[in-house]
Image 1: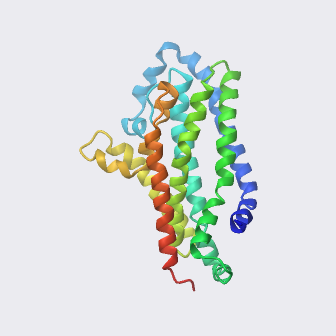
Image 2: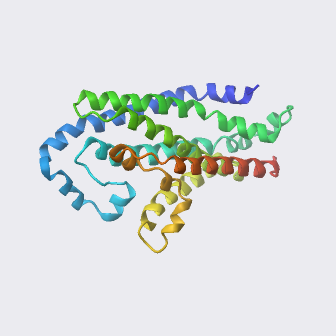
Image 3: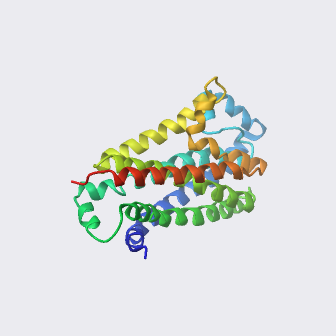
Length: 264
């Protein structure tokens, strides 16, 4: 069982290792810079926020830089995790089906006794390799790194943030998967997925506080708040469940579209 998922998952191990190492290094860079940053500004550190353009502060959730928790919430998690890692999963998922269609390998696969639904579901399941690698290693790096520079953050909050962000990342991947079954060229699917996710990310922040704020509810970033978790220890489980439903809906939509697609 799960032959397709296992096959594709094995081919993702190297990429997952590279992505995990890169993000871990990125996290350590931010962490080891913070003590110098905080000590040089002292009590005036939050005055730096006044220099941030309002749109940028809203987009990256910059609420406070006076603590390691607030600093990581904006600089590492909103930018590095929600945006960059989210784009990584959307981009990776966008090639799951489209790449095989473009290379004319999909018709060979479908000639085997496998359903189109199984192909889509197992291809999507192969993304568990980078998902597990990133979610298991990065929080450990963050907890140990902040302790090493004497600005420790609660391990429980970091763990919960990564746990609650799992549905966010699968939703991002779901967006890419839908693009992958709509387009028959991987490059087009990847550009479409990245463009949609970037638009949703920045659109949500621009709509917040306006008469059109409700429209931002379609953005997955509305349902993950690193500041609330790291600074206030507030865990929005209901928001995570919304993203679980969104992931299931996107995967289901991808299955329906792929079943109706002619493979040439």
